[in-house]
Amino acid sequence: MRRLNVALADRSYPILIGGGLLSRADLILPFLRTKRAALVSNVTVAPLYLDVLARGLEKVGVGVTPIILADGEAHKNWESLNLIYDALLATRCDRGTTIVALGGGVIGDLAGFAAATYQRGVPFIQIPTTLLSQVDSSVGGKTGINHPRGKNMVGAFWQPKLVLADTDTLRTLPDRELSAGMAEVIKYGLIRDLPFLDWLETNMDGLMARDGALLAHAIETSCANKAQVVAADEYETAKEGGRALLNLGHTFGHAIETGMGYGEWLHGEAVAAGTIMAVELSRRLGWLTAADVARVRALFARAGLPVRGAELGAARYLELMSHDKKVIAGSLRLVLLKALGEAVTYADVPQEDIAAAIESCCRE
Image (cartoon, rainbow, N blue to C red):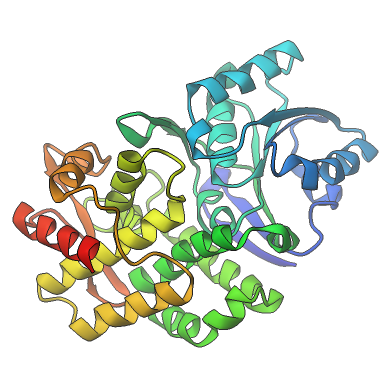
């Protein structure tokens, strides 16, 4: 088992990574306020992993309330959030109850938002079961739901008490979901860790073949990078750089998700296409070379990810991107690359250049 720490003073918490952790109630028990837990999962993950988690907790005297939701990004909304509230109220869960998210990013965001707001805040534990959630969404305390006008536009910062990433859950992960998670893994190499990017190029075939040791290293390195960024800028308030750099490709990608309808593209797929747009725009600004762009495209393609954007039209992209959370005083800040391994936030890109990069990446 590998252990990392997210350093947030009195709200610091560990990230535990390894195989067979779901049955280790002894790892979870110290982080429960009382011996009561609400386990939030979905109809896909629950049949696979809920019983082993619940049985382990019940053996050490923890009362368990299962809450099973529909699966998919289309259900990351008020209706699903209210189903969690209804279950918590119906079973008289109090402020000592810990909400545990067992699933991917959608479940983590929903359960985390419920924890942040139920009785004005209850403890929260993340048990991510997808690669994307293990390397990204489970760490850092961002929670929320989607709005028809924009992704993740309603939510709260609410840090977990523990992140428990059982790598055995990746064995049942569909290939498409594995690829989607790899988009966020590659992101860390692009924005701040060039040696990791080199390592990913060397080992991508083994990662896609689900080599356990390689996946564990990729998860650990990704989480270590995110933990450092979150510790330095928890609430994404830095005027330059900071936590916003974790959003490479996300502004374009969120436009794809919203414009196409939530669930049509997986989050990681949209981020991959969005990252290609950001990289192409960086080239047009003179920061990257054509060879750099080709290198990034090739790595995403090897991971089974799209390198061409959805054909929404540049005008529609720009309209959707205007709702992005990084818009400040009407100015859209984009995360771009000064060089591979060096990301920046930049607000002075002419719209015609953004539109040209979008159209180029939707044609090719």
